[in-house]
Length: 120
Image (cartoon, rainbow, N blue to C red; front, side, top):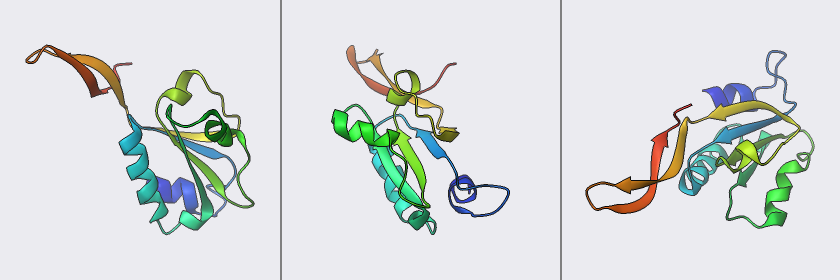
């Protein structure tokens, strides 16, 4: 509902200017979200951009470019964009409230990445 409201409707209440930044915990969630957004009835109004650490520097730089005419830029990212990047045209931020951190499995005594709720 929220993405349909903010991302696609063209009315006075929700202008199409400015980018949307969506924080997700990892690459799989980014890919799944972009796939779902591409299937939305408003997908033609959006320019979808992933942002995560495995992208090349050139690919990461695309998020600073202005979107194609009349489209809303939607950046779907991990917390890479939270502290190290300022994207000046972002007007909405959607945070999943989840992050992936290195944690210890106490049963196996092995460290692994674990998805957790953000504690702040």
